[in-house]
Length: 165
Image: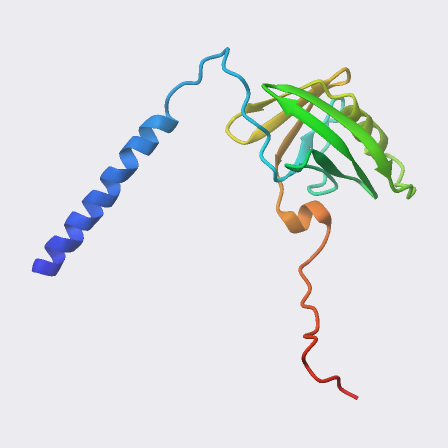
């Protein structure tokens, strides 16, 4: 009986500790508040101006890194450059790209151009990143790292293991 009482008290204390965090997250953000920083996670494109069909997850991603470099997957090409951003203002400068020929209908060129010409960013619906420029709004959601970079973790051979021969 005593262990049940201790368990009940522990559960109540744990639940009570969550109340301030829930109350703080439920507060409204003033409309004139500056946009928060862009989290350094891979973002996948979910909406592009003029595109009404589905965008394949992971084909178009952007990763804003803390050292102010940016890595972009644009369909069949990889793009890199620099970025700066604060308080909703965004500047992306594309400096290098691979030159693979993407399939007909690819958004590769307009996607890269849209990022290169980006002027602002905002967040909506929790974790939707909206990047805006002359072409309109591009929308992104967090991407799984393997999806963003098109890789699957690979186990490398142990250097200390004897070679089979």
